[in-house]
Length: 290
Image 1 (cartoon, rainbow, N blue to C red):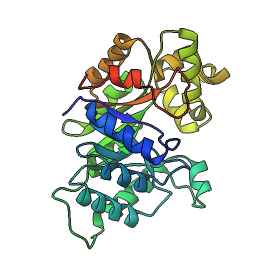
Image 2 (image 1 turned 30 degrees about the horizontal axis):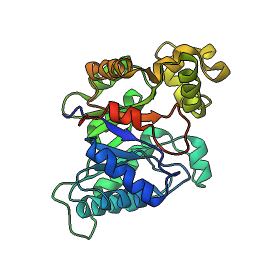
Image 3 (image 1 turned 90 degrees about the vertical axis):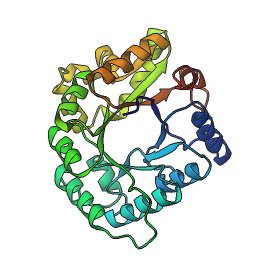
């Protein structure tokens, strides 16, 4: 399995021409894929289609598409359509999200395991009446707990994790076994100023601190309620965010790979705070082609 990193980045602040240039530039730098998140900005499958049309080799993933935002038949159609039209460069990343997101879409919340299982079963059973791609697009699901990791092994090609320590990657690899992708999303800040790096890290993880699913997961890996106060403790920030110089960041990435990760998806945090643009110094330093 390739260890060339991918990029996950909120591109909603970029104009269309800037988005095309961004994707083309990370393609030249040798990154394997661009992951397109979903919140309340651009519709992710439309954005993925645009990026695929403006690149030649880059793989593009929904990272992640919320299963409450569209039904599984539509997801099956998008999976086949984008894989066919891109020549096999599309990846379908899915996640069960959290109760507030389901509520925002006016859909009742269902426990994660049965919700994702039913969603995947529908995708896999749907016969899309259009030309098939040479190979079906891979499906990766967001999975932190053992039950969703087991489902990833049974129904998909891999799992994505976020804000978890290397010990979690080791457990996840054991649950998945060999032959499955284990993608670790790692917020990354190339900044040697300890105070600034942690302030940026706290801002990046802040929206996840109130969510029970993340608190439960963190507490299983040695954190406690005190780590969730005042925007997150130093040790929580240091566990969730790779910061420092290039050497220190590469060492953190290597920890996850040694623990069993197939690939790191870099979430670049910009210490220079210059609008919606990514931190190119970071992306160039960590580029496979660099």
